Image (cartoon, rainbow, N blue to C red; front, side):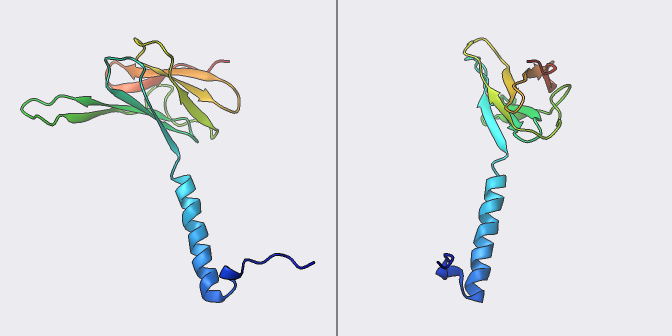
Length: 131
């Protein structure tokens, strides 16, 4: 029995094209390294951003700008406990509490959780992970 060969990539020029297509699809898979989740608080216009590999958390929200009808995007960088950590597999989970302005960062490999929130309107802070 002969091994299966994909004939569309058999010739050298086509093999190069197939290799490029494979490389592009691999880089597209890596491009989905972030997860976004709105805070559950119903009167808050804030979205959290998570780097799914490092666990780094930041947040942005809409803000009013004096003299402008468009407004501005206000972003809060990672602060205490929210900076990049050990490589892993992280996710964000919102509680169903409509008054909660933070989200849970979960480590999908260990089951540990942290609560992340905007601290003092200057940065995102996360509690130490616990299980």
